[in-house]
Amino acid sequence: MTQLAIYPGSFDPVTNGHLDLVHRARRIFPRLVVAVAHNVRKTPMFTVEERQEILREVLAGQSGVEVDAFSGLLVDYAKRRQATVIIRGLRALSDFENEFQMAHMNRRLAPDLETFFMMTGQDHFYVSSQTVKEVAYHGGDIHGLVPDLVIARLKLKNGQPPAARV
Ligand code: PNS
Image (cartoon, rainbow, N blue to C red; front, side, top):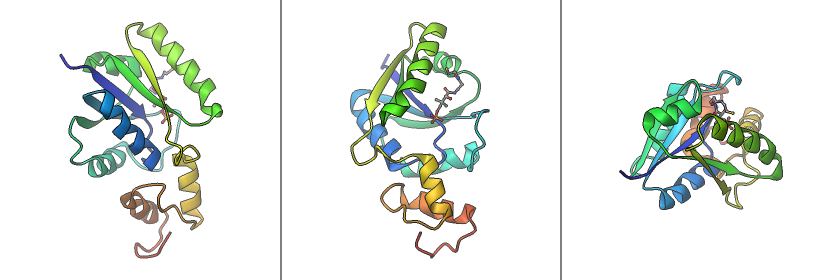
């Protein structure tokens, strides 16, 4: 059976950094699931359904890529999906400690599941969903950092007119 990789995350909302990673990971893994987490420790701006909808739209036409959602432990979801690899992106050094802890905890829980780290593309290493939301909220320019669809969705959430340039 072809190896299935899971790229889990909050994707609240998806950024061009995430998309770059999906495209690059897809060159390595023939089947990739982008899995939106029902993350109980975060208060999201977009619902899980909205985040999946956006991802499906921006990833439409990408063969071998599926969008899904999960709750509970990632390792349990991976087991259900019979996935063998978890993909995570690393931007700056500051990501490392948290990712290191997560990877080790996941390995302890599921020794056969491998975490595969990829460096974020150089154009995206400073982009995060959090900063994008903050800049958009204050009316700053986020073109090029997220897909246009996300810009429109953020405007709606922030109560800005759809035609107004962010
Ligand atoms: O995009 P994020 O917020 O960095 O993604 C974090 C995510 C969703 C991958 C992580 O919080 C996660 O795996 N959550 C599911 C619950 C779980 O398995 N926690 C144990 C990991 S140590």
